[in-house]
Amino acid sequence: MSDTVQVLAEPSPFPLIAGKTALIVIDMQRDFLLPGGFGESLGNDVGQLLAVVPPLQALIEAARAAGILVIHTREGHEPDLSDCPPAKLNRGAPSKRIGDPGKYGRILIRGEYGHDIIDELAPVDGEIVIDKPGKGAFYATGLHGILADAGITQLLMTGVTTEVCVHTTTREANDRGYECLVVSDCVGSYFPDFQKIGLEMIAAQGGIFGWVADSATVIPALEALGDQR
Ligand code: TIU
Image 1 (cartoon, helix red, strand yellow):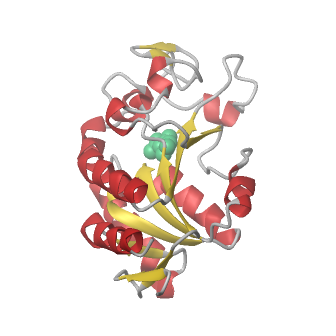
Image 2 (tube, rainbow, N blue to C red; image 1 turned 60 degrees about the vertical axis):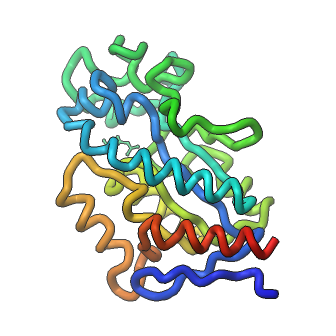
């Protein structure tokens, strides 16, 4: 019996391979999704991101059921800000910048309520959570080593925001040799235009950064993979 299921994706079928596939859930944190957090302090309409939650919840459940490795990331910084360069610190409205007090504790600081993942998508016991100081999940983290040790070559990319942390992480993954499928309704942007173009940029040029498919296509493929176990 084959250990591979082909997902009908743009620009071509994506091989979902048992034991070699991981689901990456990027930065589904209160600071980006809830009013009063970091995302809103940058002037964004955070309501745009909430549509991602139900399909991503279903996708995570399907991945768990299929025995796929699920890895969550969180963007944030040490309380002394030693890992936050001025080029990043100086973004957003003064008094509402990284490290400043916000509605959910100090903005984007590890250990604060706002820095953690929303309740609906909370990791379960044993799932890996990567704390990252940058937009990309490979920069200054152990993610590449964890994936290499687990024999992972195929990544399902989800989370927020499409054109910032999802794109940066997908590009980093691409340069490290991973094949990435971005799940279109499980990534979200504050800007509808960026969502559309950001997804097009992944699959353009024959899949220059990877593949794109929606959760209604990926979930049955995960179920088929799980049935083969
Ligand atoms: N501002 C924005 O769109 N995103 C971020 O700052 N971080 C992530 O995308 N996680």
